[in-house]
Amino acid sequence: MTRPPSSAVLERRWLFVLGALVVVQWAVVAWVASSAQHAGLHYGDPAVAGRFHGAARDGLVVVQVIVLLPLALLAIVGAMERLAGRALAVFAGAVWILVPLLGYHYFDFRMKPAMLDRFLPEVLGLAQSTAFPAMVALAVAVYPLVRTLGSRDRRWPAAAGLAASVALVLSPTTVLFLAGALVTLAIRRSWVALGVLAAGAVPGLLAAALWHVHDPHAGAPILHWDYAQFHANLMGFREYFWSLRVVEWLPIAGTIGLLRRSIALGVGVALWFWLTVLLRGTVVDTFSTADPLHPSTAFLGMMLTAYPAFVLLLAALPFLVPRLQTRLAPAPS
Image 1 (cartoon, rainbow, N blue to C red):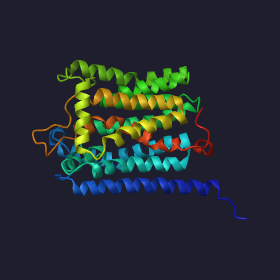
Image 2 (image 1 turned 180 degrees about the vertical axis):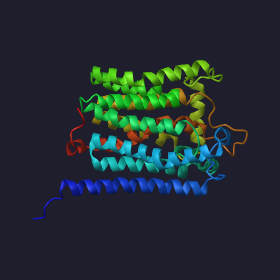
Image 3 (image 1 turned 60 degrees about the vertical axis):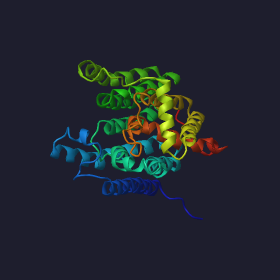
Image 4 (image 1 turned 90 degrees about the horizontal axis):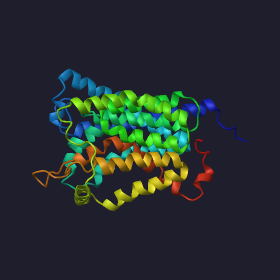
């Protein structure tokens, strides 16, 4: 009879899997870095990159790719491991890595140059923008939030609140994550954890408020609802993408799947994602340019802070499989 592997062996195997995911992520970065238009380490929007000096810009790119990008990946994998086990955690990591590439593949020829030169460098940390580190901070915040659901250790909600605070400093629109996280803990009636998380987010809220008061461009809305504009953006997405219906139904199905696994977390992540789509995706006409053969990726860039939520919803699709829940470890409670 074959003896099962020891816990030490299993942990070494798991570390190997995590390392393999990071290497694959870096391989994707290397492909984009070699294929996208660039000057040295200057990727993405030249107007944004021009705000940084050469050495600072290059150092920022290195830190984002070597440190922040793997950190976000491992945080999402860790959250899904706590939620459903290691098999689905690897699936979540694969979703995180592959979704930008699949998006690039299924946009038509008019959109591909903008995807390769603008959006992929931004989502992979090659470009200089506050949206990428804000996205990483929210991905990191997801892990302690999931840990909070199954623990009374107050360090977890404090860590989630501090990560959300960092995200708020970088991008005030990340307040939508904070709303979802607070609703998650309210549904669980974890009032002490809710207070700790809210307290941790206070510095970021104050910084965001000060930015809105003193920034000369703060008059432009960062969150806004306009049905006509939202419909126009959806039609722009449909014009350039393979199937709008698939993009609509995948996160809807993922929302149902995540609700089947954890009602509290499902509601929180759904609020974060769908409010970002509705309130952030209607600010401007995000696909239009002077040349219809060269559309803009602005809509996708505005959704970047909801990318961790989108990955979690896609990674929750297996929860729709009948009787899969009985084969998984109990959800955090």
